[in-house]
Image (cartoon, rainbow, N blue to C red):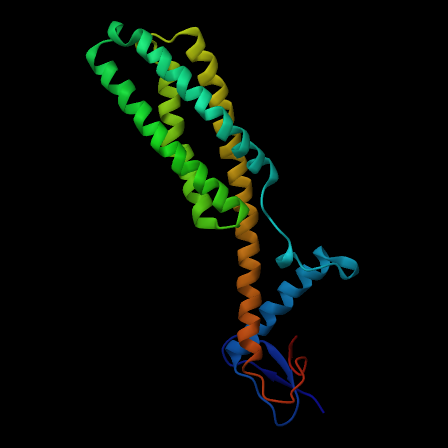
Length: 215
């Protein structure tokens, strides 16, 4: 015979068999797993593999990083060549700003591409988040300064290469945001599944995993 009991803390009704009891936190975690399992069954019909085994690396982001890796040396040599041509026609503070901006942008670009590759291919959220922050907080402002401040004497070649680089950067920021959202959802699902794994370690030997259910 099954008995219907009320949880003392949450008020849920629990079906349990005589001689077996489960603590309220364990019942809550089982209830959470039931909800996760129902979502997975809806998302993976016809017995397809669960979402946790799927790769969530973002292909458009990887393509952008690949082409950016080849474009950056061309951009760098063009920018340095243009800077050398106009260097002595600039005010002293603009000379310092442009040299500092080129050095900062070059160093950050190497670290940014590395973090983007590692974070996307290996599905590492911290590295990909660092890539997104470096792109949005450092590269984007410096590049906008190179494109919009007329005091630095923007040459036609500079405007062309900077504009193309800006398109790469904006597309990478958007693609990295989408990849981060997908990877975060996968991590949340893995977290709930690990909770259920800990729950099963509390089950006495010989007890069926479906002996208790929240109703």
